[in-house]
Image (cartoon, rainbow over all chains, first blue to last red; front, side, top):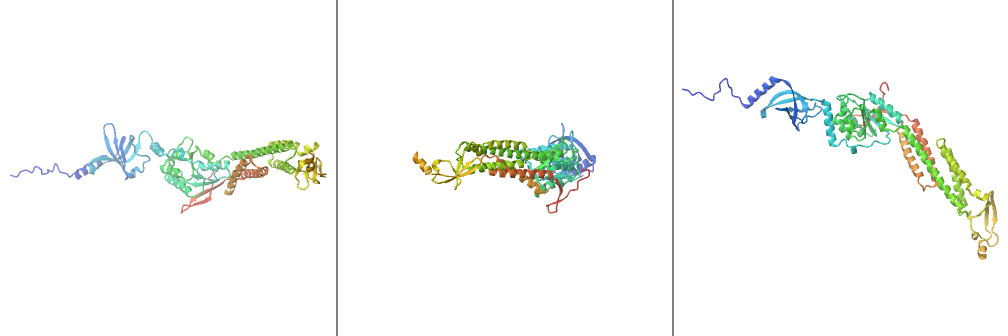
Length: 416
Length: 80
């Protein structure tokens, strides 16, 4: 009698290898479900160096292992993060090396808010942590730029508004348009490239990155990480003028200055022509005031000289000063024109006071002074005279020649 | 507006500020003050003239194959 082989396989219960059974289960899972949507909360997120993401989707009772391959992850605008409530779509499968079933996620949507809002918040938080928005990173804008680069669409309303406003404010400006797409697939790359291009070439002093208003989707290029990084790395200061007052983009946070509208950007970048004109007038006024003050000092000095009577200062010098004051008055009056007319009137008054103090006024009262005919020096002491010294006596109406009789100063001294 | 005019304006403004400051210094000789004043007035006139006459210049920058810049005339879009 042949003993039945207890271990022999019966047709009803085949024996599989591990690989075989996993393969069977895998096929079952795939066939039974196809594409499925699952909603849950993300936990245990791990990003691999390979670019693949692993995470667990869970609810109160249960967990599901998920994998997001790099190619799918690249299409996401945000990153899977801990605690995020999401709906995922993908296929169920089995990971044979570990005998574990998992979901291969192809798309992932946040539940409760939009993917773009989420991406915006995530990038904002990330760059903020890196310090890209720090005030001390921000460069100051040039005081008076000669060349402004407009990185924007060459056909949009923004470029038109900017050119018009800049031209009106500051006509000495050279506006240089760097045309880029401001929405759509190619926009971020073109903006980055434009900023790098401007950094390499000495063609502008400041950049305005501009776009008119639009939906969050329309403005998306300005919320891209590489655009933000290109702004941060820009050699030239960047002013962002994207969207309307209420639209904030990442570009706005990282730019050196943010303007609510293109018109406001123009105002940030160049001064108003009128401001400069006022500045000019102020400078001219300061000049005139300084000169007036200077003339007051001069007048006081002359006054002191005259009050000391003896005309110790050589007459010629005093005359010279008075003359230069006169010359100055003339030139000043000629130059000042209408704008500084009031000042000129004041100077006239000063001039009137000055002439009252002139040596001539003193001479009219009967005084005379004498000058050595040879040297031209004013002779102020009798003791300084010599016998037969030739002098000129200055009267109010002119000079008269004279000569010292007798011993002059020497005789005077011996008598004393 | 030519680049030279903008440079002109800037250097005139800088010089004017120097002149004002020098004029305000109490040690300045009168002769020197007069010379400076004249120069300042001339600069002021020049700046005003530049501001009055200036017309903004607009062009378009394109990137050449080698990464350098090429300036082209800018055709204003419709409606501007």
